[in-house]
Length: 288
Image 1 (cartoon, one colour):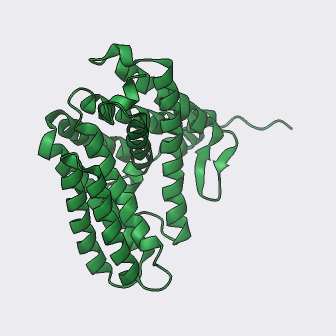
Image 2: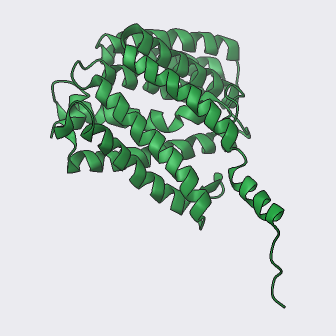
Image 3: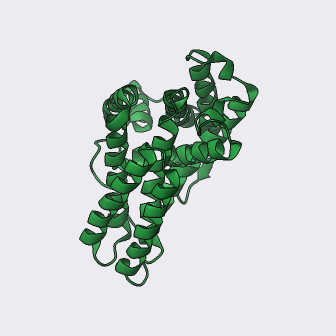
């Protein structure tokens, strides 16, 4: 006997199941995107402060997830470490920023106690890589704003298109034990879309000659790392039995849930730019 046709309400319920979290996600994402773009446009201390606050939230959430001794003291020290790193990075002293993070990370290992001596300092390095990489890229007079706009396009494009691609196409799960909702189809759609959106920023930006095959390839790597960053954050939460990093952002959980992909992609971009030896780290992404 053939399967009876499903009613309209049943189909609507199925669609709601696929996109039931879309409303809160859109509202929260719109507010965060607007704030990030304003900080990028203004630049200077406003930009540095925005990413410092984001990094502090990430550090606070991470220390809450992993637990351990002296949690309040670690949160306070993490704020001091990130402030120092942000100040150094915003003024071009990247090595000093990394040294400050390393010194405080060693102190974290002592304070956290047995079983957390690796995880607690790793959280500070994780949050610190966000504020350091964003600031060292942004300070380039010619390519700084473009590099951050490119990262936004790659990471946000990969995230949004992976969300819709996975729900509309479906198929095999990417890593069901860690992130049950993610599919291979969504990952592939996000990967290609993120790279293309990043290339579009270069095409329509102030330096269109930067739109090259090399930049497209770098965008593919950055988009892949952004999705890996998302999986990494999901794995950390499952490792410590936590559903959400926090409840700071409606529809998203915590700040970590919003910047996990950006952390990986931004750190990669800063590292690649530094290795290429151009006039600035940001220039290393676009001049080939």
